[in-house]
Length: 477
View 1 (cartoon, rainbow, N blue to C red):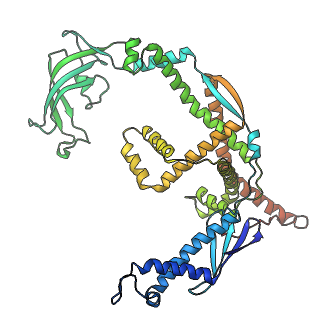
View 2 (view 1 turned 45 degrees about the vertical axis):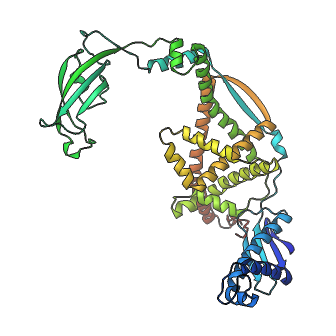
View 3 (view 1 turned 90 degrees about the horizontal axis):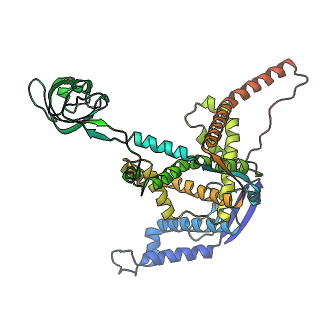
């Protein structure tokens, strides 16, 4: 194989590959020998079919298969040996090919730019830890206790009031006839929440244990039996118990019910929980700081095919006119994103960062935990969508790279209070929103500016040069 590389313009290269006739014949011979033992033709024993007959019967298919294999193997080798990393799929142009001929083709490649990552060690970023005050922990525990149901049964003479829990059995009828689902045993209703049927709770206010009560209620729109929707039903209720809510005592038993060893252990767990809630958001701030610093790195040229692909993503769902107006702004955003991605990827390759299957499965499990009750749906989604798994792998890969950058860069550790954390996060959120609004307004402003310049040009033609700028273009591959 003979390879020559011709620099066309910027990152564009033509890689010319030549494979002599003898080498191509060797590939063909190997393929014919491979199929010889598998072909069954009438009049010939297996493995004894002459080459000429095989060629007559299967020549085109054999050559096509050999050509695909040779192109795949040699093109990858040609790029690897010349240390060319393509930005996107190279364009292949066959010059000479055919059975009993040499093979000559040209790969038109847009190369990834060379990236210098030495400056990563000089990146500065803030790393926050939140000091959780004991009062904050106690406040959270009290909120948990307040939401824990703690009902105690009262005497048979005590009447139920709003907020009490009533336990009852019931049988129901519509027009004197029972229906499917018309019976309930040990049904528990917290009066005032109206979670059973509209107006049902109010009719139970004042009942006592062992009372019988007829309650009238209208069956709802979502009742399973459509013929009974909006029908008036009579519920014959037998009151089994009336329970009143009592304040939960915050002690070791309370802590054990929540899975902690004791109250002190619960305080530690809650403190960590609060810290983690802020840590995730503050870690994202640290990551954004690093990404902003990477945007300042110099990259001589960004491949235009990557810019075009990114702009397509940014302009999805837009009208053609809006896309044209936003083109220049999208180009700026695309270049920043691509540059940052190229730097991260180069740093990842230099440090041999990879994502193994166990790490990928751990991330999927993390996604499942975030959507309780929908685990099967999420798992099915990933099993049926390889692109989603690839995207998840990319997320894990990026996080591993960011974590390595944090290890190598210059960290400014800050311990802050919960209030300070909230203030920082609120300020960051405002800055992000302001930037998004600024990006949205940019295209309109630029269009207005351009119109303004055109008007000035009409007023003063003798002093104004054409405002059009030549854009450096790279041919698409």
